[in-house]
Image 1 (cartoon, rainbow, N blue to C red):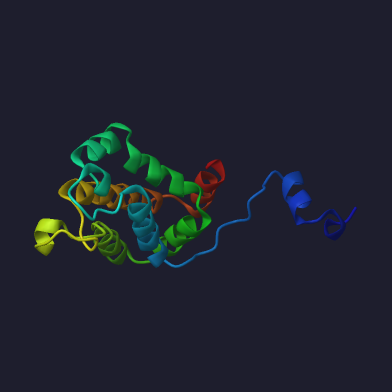
Image 2 (tube, helix red, strand yellow; image 1 turned 90 degrees about the vertical axis):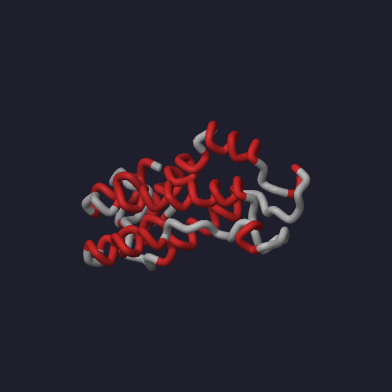
Amino acid sequence: MCASALGLSTLAFLVGCTRPYLRPGDPRDVVEAIKRAQENYVRLSYGELAHQCFTEADYQTFVAEQRARKIATGLKGDRKFMEAILALKAKSQPERAQFIEECRRPLRLTWSQLGRISREGQTDAGQRAELDIANAIADTAFELCKLTDQELFNVFKEH
């Protein structure tokens, strides 16, 4: 039976690979993954009551459950993120290091930095969680950039 009659998914299964190889993407997708994770895992803070903000207790739970590390690990199975890593690998080492360093930022300023309590800012605890996420993903990106393209693909397949 020819490959066209089998279909691509069947052919991929027959050769033991259900996920197509990675192609270089856009390194800015690393930044987008960080922002998306910060938005999804750090509650928006708009008031001083516990149900209106990311509290110190929320942060303690966040740390105890190792959420930042789990978020970063989960991205290893995200095609867009891994293709961004592949593109990042193509940069020179100094460019790559600078790019990764610039990823290590919180999403929002703290309320004290803003000088007011508003949705535009975040609690100190919330900003620490945002930084933990940014650092965990940046650390993961840094480590993934050390891998060969084949090793990177193998990590992607495993997740």
